[in-house]
Length: 370
Image 1 (cartoon, rainbow, N blue to C red):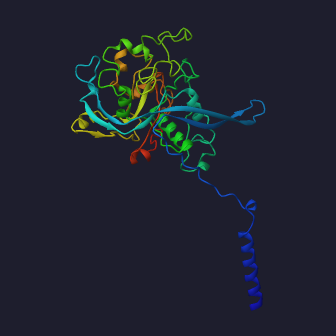
Image 2: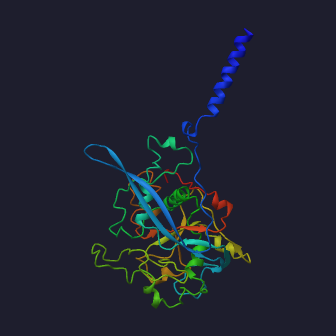
Image 3: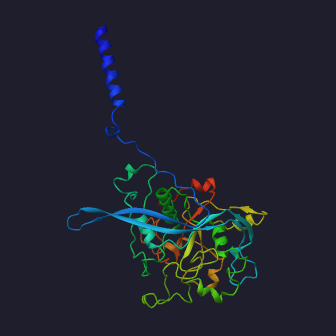
């Protein structure tokens, strides 16, 4: 009995040693995390993104994989101080632009142009991140990113698509896009805070209505807005339309379309007392109202192709509201798309030193009756 037991132990030991000394080719490959992105230098850079979609043959029902590759430019903006809001004497000023407060923002990179439909489609069709109601969604685990549902209207609203700004998505949809981009790149992309947006819009040029002064006569050189956005190539848009991003002159930081084309989502949850509260402080360091699970309200900045010049001022802000979805026939209404709000888009930023609360931030809005 002892001899048999000893023999069994020796056999098990031999098998264990053999398993541990198998050639590398015979072992299952260890799963490796994607390497962290290289530390960025304080200069502009190009962010490359790869994705893929499935194209299904209508007759055979067979799907083939189609690779998608894209890239966008990020512009480095050195941090500094800005007086947020407008003086009482500024033409076109609204009450929600004051009282003014001082803010200091850290250095960051800002997308050179607005997110285009080309960029958006990389996310929308990415088969690595399935819809929440997809039969295999649970297999992706708790860190999976859902993607927008299809629209019941043409999402471009007859504006251009190739090279034109993506538009009419909700604040939540823009947040999820940023989360997707984080997972794709390993970098903490997000929407710009109000303070960052206004700092960038002013271009380091003081506190006049526009970075070039108070007179809007130069605005058409830098922006598409109500006075110049009509395009004979889009006769179905007689009141004006979006234009290809980057087709107007950049501001002093090298950023295009911070004025006009489409208004842009800021990160902040809207609070009517924010300016009043911040004005009590000598200086506000990287101020932000972190988004909550509330679908409304958030702030858009910059003005659009449909706005008059006063809505494109650096301090101008508009607050989102439920009426922006009044034409949505769904119940509950979509958490992804606005309806007939073809003036709203977004761009992304990347902080050089991210705040912990923003580094850990995730979209929190869920679909429910309002």
